[in-house]
Length: 257
Image (cartoon, rainbow, N blue to C red):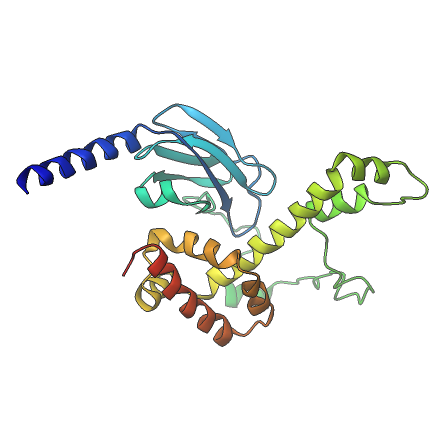
């Protein structure tokens, strides 16, 4: 019995060291409040390998267990994460970036004789009315602007009779690729909207999902077609009940109970 225990410990140690030395292509997406996450630099400080995000924030970079990644861009604060076991085993990770705000030591408000009190100063200033398409009553004021992927898809399929581009794009597979990209972005946007409905502490305390597993849990939900139907109801009660039921299956499948 004692020899078996020693053998098991030795095997576990060898397996752990093998896992630490194993490279894996880690896929993920960075996001921010303003959504401008293209060309964010992703650097593996441990292996000195680097990558860069595409226009939608997606990236892929080789990592090993316990490597350190640095995410940086001019408009954001640097973000450092260490590749834990949970991150290493995740299929897709999400990395939030914070705006890099530049604070001034002193601001001069002359020659307008401002006091610095916003409520007081607003009453003394002659401010022109805000002019926007909605205040002017323009017919297209509330039209949703298509995303870059949607615009590319429209361009690839435009005028199939007058132009050969649509036919060539269909034959080459570009149209199919763009359709998948549009759908992928829509799925991700829905998932991110659900993520912001509840604080991380709610996932941890109410659903018993470890904080470093929240993204993986939401990806687990995202691949279920019913998830999209539930999210489209915009009912937080139905969405929460769905997450509660799925959390039971997720914890069972990942031996978290």
